[in-house]
Image (cartoon, rainbow, N blue to C red; front, side, top):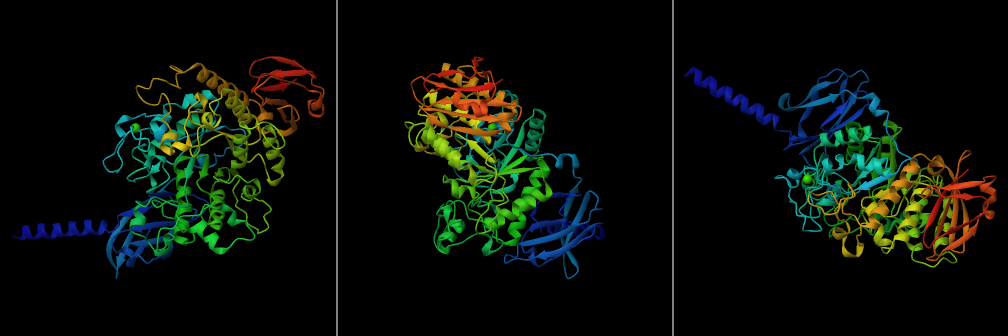
Length: 615
Ligand code: CA
């Protein structure tokens, strides 16, 4: 009898403890590190009605700075201060009510890898390869679908999930390195548990979790480590403007102002000029910044201080966890501009070497230049953002390929674009590109004209800036924006078992695909060793007779780049370039090996180019 009562009491005891433990169902960030420069740590606790409980922490060097309570009683925002002397280990966050323990949750402080944290950064010396993990290579066919995630793999659906993953990226690190790439930018790989269109990764439903169909957090960290060993840097794609409406905190909003809410669905105008327009109305400004990106993607309100701290910490967590080299910020113009500058500064304070490129989809150069760190903006705004995606140059290159060269047209369009580089504090701090995941493939942009394709590749690798390549360009992949995003973002050939064409092994490729692959490989690898092309100054000459010539140069090295925009052969004399060509007596074409005596005449076949290193 006594034994039974004891058993019952014991069982109740265990039960109570379990219930108490379960009072917390989510803790973010999942862990933190000792020896971070910023001593503050926000810990988000979520659980049924825990908002009224009193948190207690008893661990040397950890103090509770403040406790944030919000409208929703299922949240507690715990602000901790970590002393510089705090040791790695696990402490308990105990939640009490009237002195009685109602629950507890363990929290781990890991030892920071000082060496890793001092690394990072990418710059003009790099070439960035952009890939979409779902559409690049399927390295693990067992993870294509996951029981806990809504959308299952269906390769027959252009807008569906196709099964590519982090393992697929890891399997091909040698391919990127061989191609001459030095950095990888992956479209977001964190969880997108959305019922449809989840493959692109921009409707995040968990900021701390790798999507199980792409891999695990550990696999991502291991990918970064292996990439570093091959000389490849990793740039993580992050989104601050919105998340997916299946995000757990959207389903249980901490506070009404966590997101921007409207009586009826209100989409952003996407009209970025209202930010710097001296004549803009407040209504237009609010619509741009507070309107939703899409009906499935609620607009986050970064002016909520708890959310602001949450988003900043999420970035620091990933940098520290995975040892990132860079970050690409999605839709940089749509979150609160003040927050974005605050975010950039906080990340720089912790990681001075890490670099950030923001997506600035604005094709007007004056409006675009507003966003570069230290721009002399009349309104005093400083984005603190060092690199911009060069949409103005992208738009002008695209258009130049389909025009007869003339006054501000064709090759002159590119000349005029670069002449406006005075608008930038540092013109070379632009990420230059011919295409990305949001627009048609470059071979499609080039009208499937190999000559135009080649001109574009030459420009990409020899103009100022950080070149950004996109998966599939090297084998002339097509993809038309007009057919919809799903069809535009085709699977990379060779990434799936049974693919007939394979870009990794070059098997099954057409003659033109071979030519393209070799051309890219040759120029990208040459650029790796050419300081003038990487970081040298640029001098351009007004296009003449359809030929556009510019030089990249340092004190020690000069490279002449000549592009014939006509479909007919063109001959030009180099006499005109004497001020930069100087006393050089010859130059060598880095692709063909042809030696050109200088000064002299050079003939270029229709829509061809020459990259000539001067002697
Ligand atoms: Ca897979």
